[in-house]
Image (cartoon, rainbow, N blue to C red; front, side, top):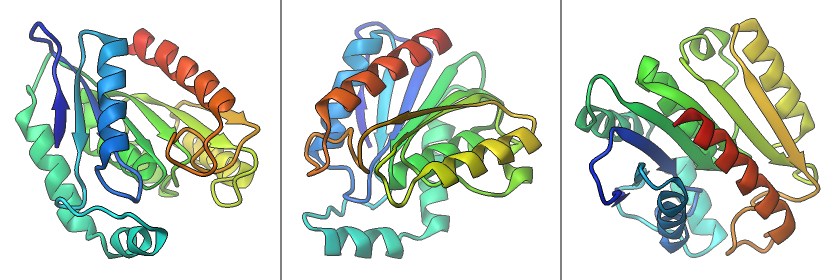
Amino acid sequence: AYIVRPQKASNQYLLLFHEWWGLNKNIQLEADKWQEKLKKVNVIAIDLYDGELAKDREKAKELMQGADEERIYSIIDAVLNSLPKQNIQMCTMGWCFGGGWALKASIRAEERSTATVMFYGMPIRDVDELAKIAGDVLFIYGEKDAWINQEVAENFQNDMIKAYKEVNILSYDADHAFANPSSEHFDEKASSKANAEVLRYLNYKY
């Protein structure tokens, strides 16, 4: 993991989950940025690939498709087990591949997780699993995204209603990975707006 701690000890944590590229420099910069914005929060960017990185789409696809779910859960469990058992405030956030894992990690954390931010990540469709999540979810996607699209968002909203859980959905006139400055689809305007909403959301949670 890549960890950025506040100057003073804190019981507040934000777990970050990387895109299909791995825990690269971009995600480390995200960790730095969010710690600076949130001030008192410990930011932990979790490496789901055991140190492997992708520099092209073919390798990224290989890593994502080859990622072992049991191994990823063991990594998440290790992080959760390293945190205090009680009296903490913890949120998760992820992008794309990591967006889906941010949701799964919040479910895994049970009552310790108070919020989840998913940037264009694929939600799970298991209503019984969604019912286990303790906090609400902020789901963000681009309206030009052919993969994480309006249908996915509406299905997720309906599933969360069935699970008696709350999800807030934001969409922007942008494509997949619009919040990643290293992406060809990076949209500075949409990214700035989305990040501002996320900051307001997280400041309310901490």
